[in-house]
Length: 297
Length: 297
Image: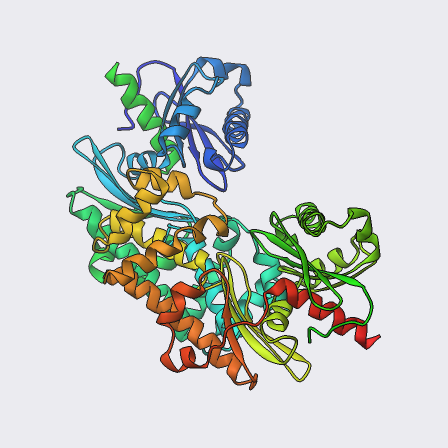
């Protein structure tokens, strides 16, 4: 839990994902002193960029808090990162000669869950650029998905964007009926036909495709059949992930990530009723994690 | 057509794709003098690599023919390349300071079609690492697909492999029933579980996924439900592409590419009956193209 410390110690919390890295500095008695945001920090997409983004976001948060960055060497950092569920990346990041007094490293999934439920047992479904489900119950964590793009991350922003691009290309080829998605994609990417569309999307990463997710929901809300099929398939998958998580009997379950407001209305009605608002963001979950680890020592 | 020339002129034909570049040297009277194979030659995946592969395959073919490579500067080359359906790449390749006396550049699709039908009108469906349909009738060409991976190329080797990986991850997560695909993928990639599987497939290109296509067909032939669903979806798409091509009334239609023997039995029965064996490979189609262009001058 986000327990108050007696001393004046300050804590750094990091939430590093595929598109950005968020840092927060909090006092021992849980006052937010400063925040910072830097670039991507998923070591799967580059170790150097990940460590640079973490250090950069931390410095920005210190600057925001009016604390000299030389103090970085005196604080405890909780660091939650995408990608470190892969053992090789966890090891690589653990070996980083970090600038902090102490670093407690874990997955972005655990810190999201700890943040959402203030350190108590619970579950989270994350739908942002990527997607996954995570529960933490009685000391056991359980992951559904978190496989990455394009082979996994169904129901994520990148997945919705890729479906839109795929179906739009089939439609522009005359293989399936036209959809309002077609015009929306061409307009968003400022291209005039399928040849230009392919030229723009070739080789693009998940974050690029995630930009196209909103237009699928826009089309679905207008009643477009193709968009409705995509949205229903993605939402059905997320509902299915939730059902898997609920088998572990988490006391609470939250939906978080950038796609939350768009996808929530499409989930199973009984799941929507169960979802509670997350209490704290993942970067605060990283501080909760660091404090829990310190308390164990 | 692969018409005989009166003179002793020799011709070079190039078929450059995403995984390899094939070269053939033929005499004016259509005798094969030599062949060569080099690396990838799709300029979308790297211009330098493409021009190096073309030059390398040409030199190997000359060496095989027992002709000094200094002769490259005296021959006419027909070059069919993947990727140059994109105007920017066609322009870039056209501007290449190539080592030949003359280079006639066109798409891998046109040379495949010209080769399959000995320069006459016709259609081809290509299913290798990628997929597409192409017809050439009365001077008009018509393309279905050829959009690339992962947003397009349905029914291709890469598409089958990606479906296998996606569905296998869902199955290993307990979200869909087990399939014999799971064990086959883990064995092929020499990994033990979904975490290791994700580690191996993350960020891999189309050619990597295409290696997994055969196991989907193996499973389907054993009656595995998931594999049958994937194979039927891919084959249905290819049959649909053929129907689109047949609307242009090509005199003949052929199926070519590495996946041909696996996918052919799953196509619509009436389409299977229509398919004829290609007469010549695409690199010979490149020579036919060069001769046609020369004849126009």
